[in-house]
Length: 249
Length: 284
Image 1 (cartoon, each protein chain N blue to C red):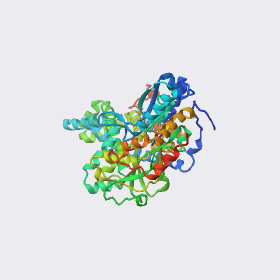
Image 2: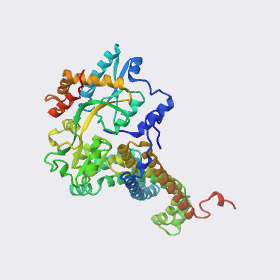
Image 3: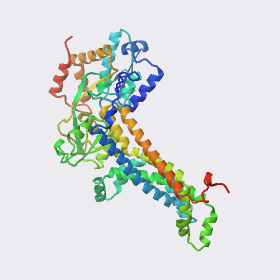
Image 4: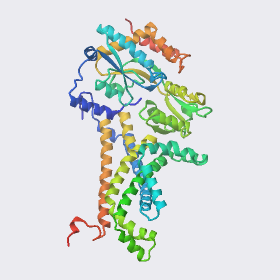
């Protein structure tokens, strides 16, 4: 398609840059890197979130304070600043052999994972705390009176129910995590946004490159939302979590 | 060094919505508004930067002032000289939104960029080299195998390394300060950019003697001033100003001021560069 004078300045569409060598491999590599860094960060983020979200509700005050400190410290500083901290700051205090090893084994990537998972872990833990606190106190009391310990009650009753309740906000948070992974390009991680910029700087085909990037993010996010929706339905506990269509009788 | 398509696209959209006419020739616009606006850098010594006395100065700015004088001569009326900050990402959009009339900074003239803007004569030539810690084994492009080399995304030298020296392990940053910090922390074995910019960086570093600039130029970076496309009357005024400066020796005085032995960034003018500049000057 040729548009010799698009919006006042010369511009010629050339969608083929998206599937020509070497640009299509850049897009693919960028996509894989985005998936890799998001998946690993998500896993750590969820674990941190469950741990600190639960700690914020336990009847032990120092633990609650510790968890609150973690959340407020990490969620109230911009992610971009955290990424710089985990890449330029934190590794500098490591013992030299470990630092050197990290430098030669993808320090950019692991700093990115650390930044994203700790930041999103703090946000996830708020979601999980909200889930836990929405469960009536009587559940905890029932668990305790049936002879379970506090940690057993949490592990076997409270958290399994809370995890079901919080699927929609966790989906939200996961989509944010995926999109925020694009910030890792500032510390040299060649993910999807990096790849689209790279194509744009090589070919000057900004429209094509950013359209491709937009569509890929959109497709990824929609698939995650779809899967999470299925998960929500599959694990729903009939009668406990009232769904509109099952709310009768 | 970089161009940004996103901003260009946004500028094009705003521009088409606002109905501003792209058609007005630059000289007519300057005559109508009584101001000549130049986009330049704020942190690229010695081409365009804020000095310790908080003044906005530089080699490119001094050259733009010569262009300014020539515009006044051509129009036969006084015109205000204004500066605006431009970055690699914003400079082309600034031109097309009519916010600036000329970009005079550190922009490399390339064939791809000529698709979008017109360039003046080349006013400075440099080429990419490497900045390394003193006593580094890296001496040039032959020593890059498996080494971690920092670059800036979208720069002409990043592209050259990727295409011609794939053995190097590139770590691509979005700006020079990030890459330089990574270099000082030992996360990179070398950082590459245009030689003159590396000299600027070295002299601004806390301990200039810790750093070495090594290697032959492995790219060619001719700096030009950029302007809106298809405006040959304006381009003529810009080029004549540059030619007269080279011919009359004013260019070399400015060169000495910014790059001479007593300046902050000594960078001797090679005989080849001098010849090249002289040969750009066409007869009267």
